Every structure is written in structure tokens, then in C-alpha cells.
Image 1 (tube, rainbow, N blue to C red):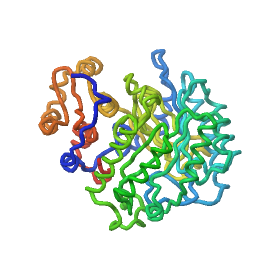
Image 2 (cartoon, one colour):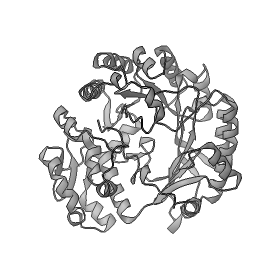
Image 3 (tube, rainbow, N blue to C red):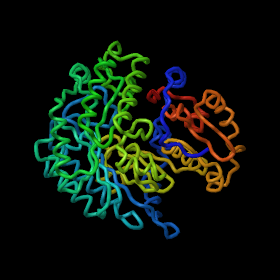
Image 4 (tube, one colour):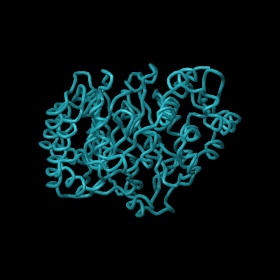
Length: 465
């Protein structure tokens, strides 16, 4: 038995229904809902100051959160602030600069960026001059390298002609384009009217400007969606031929995200239709030549994401699948989440708190967590399953000084049902997800989540399928 990252999928609708309950997306372990306020600014500073402990400094990745959006999309679960006042972004950037200065001053080791990502909200809410200002802020405290991965999320509705070219001139070489669905009925239902021509124009400008990779975001399970209309959206996506595609399942959690209360539940497709849309998209995209990376990502075979998976370098973080494993992730901006050393940290949730802490000369930390030896072990196991579909048992035992079968005796007992259903294979050397189990990898990982084992609380998570 060995790694199976590119094995053909086997889609079993019955098993998808049986195991398709709510669960984490595992962009981190422990998941963000397990962070605690006892991990404060002082704890974060200690992690930054000890990045080069033992003379070894990990690579550095930087995330900047731009929370502003001009309009509300009803499905959105991101941390955002709806405003038409562009003066708010000018103030926000001044405070991001303050935070960058504080973080950089505390950060030991080199500050060369192998990866930089700007997300939101809507990063292209920023005016061209503000985008230049943001890059100047970053460049004044961190060093861009020639072969780095520098990406930004764009809303095609908020980019004037020439903006994408400007992003390339500023140093961005990857972009993610929000689409969700091309069907006008669906767009009206989620309050996101976006003409197909606008999307195509942004992608064409990105290609002409030399972007290395362009991603389109899609969502299935939205109100008014059906299999036939979603198939037409897939037609258009295949014709646009982005380098990567993210296909997310809509998580309807109106008790958590207030804008979703404006979606009529009667308009949502049922569980069977969701599965049909997802499996249709997977079949069509893979038939069109895309590699199914895992969970919600597809890439062309020559894209760096697919190459990283083939070479065993794939990683998963708060932006999804990534080509840069073992990087410390510094996060700037309100609500932003970072990962430095054996810790996670999240910034303040509101602008007022964020501004007040920075005015006091403090890092704007809300909460975080320092990982235990058990957390590090389980994170390594879950990362391996999410990224590569398999875990080398001996490697895990040597790295973490455990006896696998004894340490995970309870989990392996629970895993027997997955094994019996052909979702997982286990022998003395490998724990591997089968082609039949790849779409249910989140459910498989949940078996090894100690926090879920001690507290079976899954209502705040999205559906696995």
C-alpha cells in the first residue's frame, strides 16, 4: 500500500449520504473554534521572537485581511464589513502599517516572503493608490523574493479595466476570481449579480498581464440551483479554462451568519441535488483534464498545486491547499488568523478593538492556542490525509515517539466502519484513504480529532458534502 493522491475517484452516493454530516474543513488543527483568549499578545510575541530557536528559521508566509465589501452577498461566511465609504479603507491601511511594524520588530530570523496573500472581504475594494500603499507597507517590513507566490482575491465587479494589470505590476502573480455561479436566477437569490463578460474580461486581462495561475471560485448548494443550470455554469468554466478551480459546498448556518437569514430555505437544493451537482462537477472537470487535488480544489496538471501534490509538498492552511509547507504564517488585519511555530493566533474581531489595541502599541490579538505534543501529532496525521490521502505509520511513530496502534487504539476501533465500507485501508505500514473515500476525507479526519471526541459538537460546521 502507498500514497494514492492521483487515484481515480469512486463516487458512491449511498456512502456520501451516510457519512456526509457536518464537520470541520481542517484548514487548521486544532480548529479555530478551539482557540482560547488565554493565548494573548504576549504569547504571540514569544512565538515571533523564537522563530529561529536552534538556529533554524522556517519560511515565512504573510496574509493581509481586507474586510470591506461594497455589497452583501447573502451566502457569505467571511469576516467582512459592508460599506460604500472608501475613506474607511484609508484609515484601515494606516493601522495595518502599525501592526506590520510591531510584528516585524518582534519577528526573529529572516523576513523573506515565500508566499503573500491578500484576502477579504474584497481586496479590490482598495483603490489603485491604496493597493500600491499596501505593497509599500509590506515591502518596508518584509522582503519579496523573485520566485515567491503572491496572490490576491478579486471581485470582477469591482475592478476597472487596467486594475488587474496594475496588480501584476505591483508583484502579484496569482489571483482568485469570485464567480460562485453564472446562472442569473442564482445570482439574484444571493444578491451577487455578475455578468459573465465581466468575469471573462478579468481573466483575460490577468493572462495578458502574465499571471502564473488564475483560480475561479464556485459554490454548489446555493438557492435556486439545480443540476441542469449548474451544468451550464460548468460549461462556461471549462471554456474559460482557469488554472485552478475551487468548488465549495454552501454551508447554510443562518444562526451563525446573519446575512444567510435572507436566503429562503425552501429555495435551497436538497441533499440529493447537492450530491448530484458536486459529483457532476467532479466528473466533468476531471474529464476536461483537471486534477482533483482534494476536498474542494482542482488544478491543471502543470499548475504548481498539482505538481506539489505529486511531489509530496502539498500543504493545507487557512487559504485552502498551498504549495508551501512548513512556513510560518503571519496574519495582519482585523480577524486575521496566523500560525507561527507551534501556535495559532487570531486578531480582534471588530475595527474598534483592532484600532484601540494598536493605538496602545499592542499586538491586536484576540485569542489563539499553543499546540501540545498531542495536537502536533494529530495535526501531522490530518494534514497527511487531507493533502496526500495516506499516512506512513513508521514515519509518524519516529517523528512523534509513539506506538501508533496503542496511541490511537480508540480511533482505530472507530475506523473499522470506514474500513468495512471500503473508505480506508490499514496495514502495518500505511493508513490510506481509498478512491471511494477521498470525497469523505473530512469525515475520516474527524475520527482523529481529539476535541470532537471529547465534545461532539458539529452544528457550527458545514456539511462534509
